[in-house]
Image 1 (cartoon, helix red, strand yellow):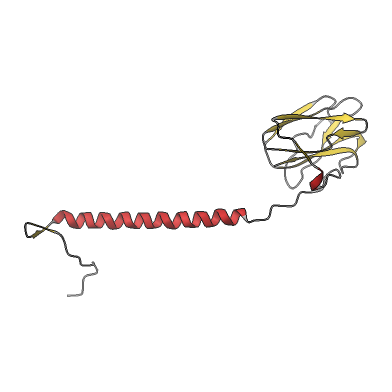
Image 2 (image 1 turned 180 degrees about the horizontal axis):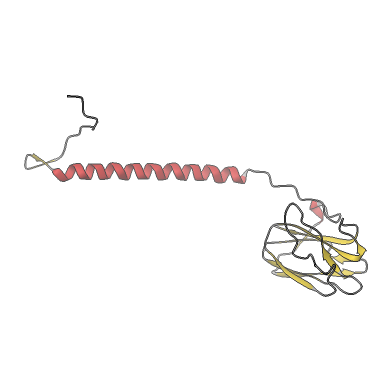
Length: 168
């Protein structure tokens, strides 16, 4: 007879006879051990994955409308406004957190238009009419850079009266 593949063990006895429940309990303990070992492995892999994600270098911030990474003015409010000031915008380079409501003031003298997508992020300020002549308010929830310009005094390449919003 071939040897049994089942591991042998000594079953606890009750009044000198093997306890049939002990074998079931032994199997349940072994299953619990296997489950716990699997959870520990998953937790370890999860921590290593999270640490690997943290060490990745963030993508460089693109230069839009002449705004260099150090030029952005940070605001920590839930709503802010960008307004024309002569032939420029104030602030020209704005940094906000996700979920911030941003208003760009447009007028007949300074119609505002959003630049095309930057790094694949669609610009919510793009006006299908070719430039908004009123204030445009959007809640920015996707991280990225959003460029805008005055259709009379700037252009889609960020020259002249133009600016950028960095959403983190």
